[in-house]
Structure formats: C-alpha cells, structure tokens
Length: 124
Image 1: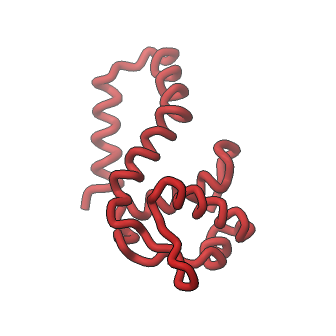
Image 2: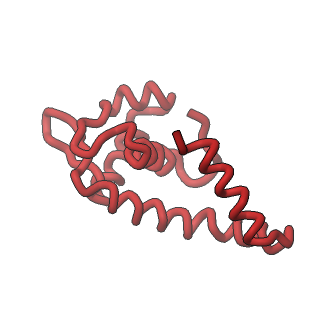
Image 3: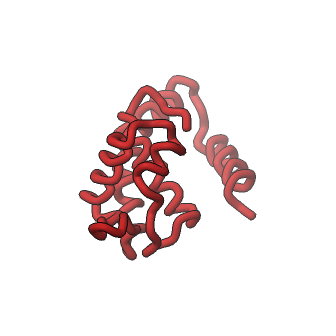
C-alpha cells in the first residue's frame, strides 16, 4: 500500500478498512483480518495497525472479542459514512474547493466528470 504524507499512516489504514467495508468487500458482522496479517499486507509495523484498529473501535465501527479477534459492527456502515465524511470535509474538501475556484471550473463540468468516474470505477 502506498501512503500519502498526510494524514497519519494509521488513519490511512483505518480509511482503507472503512473503504473495504463500504465497497462490501468485507461484510458487516465478519471477522477482520488479524493485525499481523494487515501489517504484512500494508507493509507497516503491527503497532500502526493496532492504532488504526483502536481508532475504529473508538468510532464503534469494529469491536474486539478478546481472544478471537476484531469484528465489524452490524451498524458500521452508518458510522463509517459519518467518520469518512468528517475526514473528507476537514482534510480534502478545502483543497478541492480552492482548486475549483482557482481553475474557474464549472460545477456542471465537475458533475460530468464525477458521473464518468463512477461509471468507470464502481458500476458493474
């Protein structure tokens, strides 16, 4: 996994987990992959994944069943949407809006590009 400079890596890993849930690659109620396994996949220290899982647990997106592992909460979808929207509005939207203003882009043009992006990447 390639990481951006910001936000912190553990937050990017938490976003990665959330994205897999939102895309229904990982199902509500399912057991998550272990901390060690995700650390190997993302090529980070297990402590970093632990911080990501701790953050997701604080957000009530996942729960730790002691001795068994971490599981996705049944109502995680709504919580993820709230968490991700908050992160997007705080970190990415200001940069996006600034660029729209500076480049004098029209929202109709952006809507067309958005629709095309969704069609190419998410519609089956």
